[in-house]
Length: 352
Image 1 (cartoon, rainbow, N blue to C red):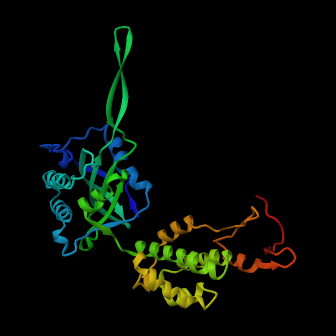
Image 2 (cartoon, helix red, strand yellow):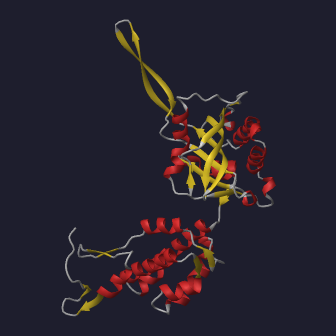
Image 3 (cartoon, rainbow, N blue to C red):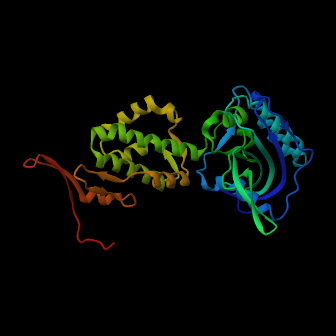
């Protein structure tokens, strides 16, 4: 988890980068920009709002040979070792971005490199580097008094409600390649920012593994449990799975399977499915890991707990109290009507 509310912009350098394939220029400012008090809250909201609103999927700098060959890792380390040198390193960062701007779809724009302090990540106070890029220009109107009339003037500028690209590099977990958050609002050049400029991989911490394992379970429920059992058991399997994650600090696969799979015949099916699909979710060799509570809460919010019937009836099962569905909902077959049915037991109807 991150906290950006008390973050202070210690330094801000602004440059402009063009598209190299179109022979557009690069402009590097000689000195850092001096922020004025009236601009600070606006620019902070512009930079940080996308990170507060998005899911925290962390990345880390990576290289197939060694981290020291990753240019952005080197530049980040150089800044963290000597924050007073951030402006000079910001020029190297902008030059590096320019060298990756070879695809004709890549747009020119302003590059902002900031040094930040008073951030918190995983309850640890840290400094960070913010790198942001504005690309899309917006039309807006200005009005000016001219004699007895108002004159309309059309101008262009950036929309402070939408950051085009950005990343936060936290001075945290350096040995793994730092912990990084990134946003990219424009998908026409997806590989340019993440792969070519930053050169990052997913940060495989407990948050990452917890999310991936739960997603794997969700697909197993849909692909294996549903055909073998029924929709109720698919929902209840995921219900039991999420509750296992919610009440335990440590995941252990054997205990998990014994607890969540009512049908023991599905245990070898689960293991076989993991052999076939585990690499897709980066869990092929994972059998134990610390559970991230935030990832469990996020997964619970996204999961569907509704059985939709072809008779235009829905049955909503409770993820908080799964024993209710186990005890009080039964599925059967009516010979006379030649239809399945769900039998629901209750004492009295609850008021809405």
